[in-house]
Length: 84
Image 1 (spheres, helix red, strand yellow):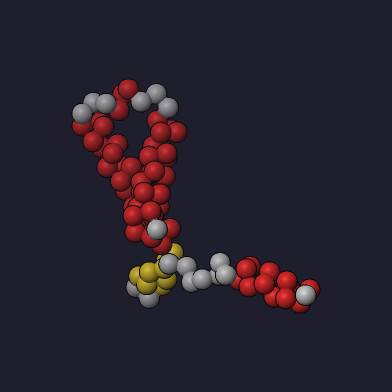
Image 2: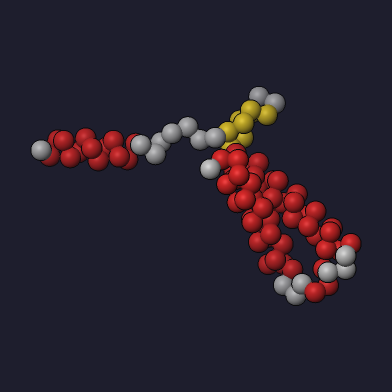
């Protein structure tokens, strides 16, 4: 009985070891989360430019915290859209 439990526990631990989503870019494999983070930073920079254009950026008090949160939001949304 102990051997069966040990085998099931081992199988449960290995079940999450599937291949991670990655992309081949110029022969080097990049993890998908890295591409989502880069796209999130680009979208956050575009958001900044839109806010500056409409003169709304001056109303953001804690911009040092807001823009990384916007980048994280876009990165998580992209991850959920493409890899969920």
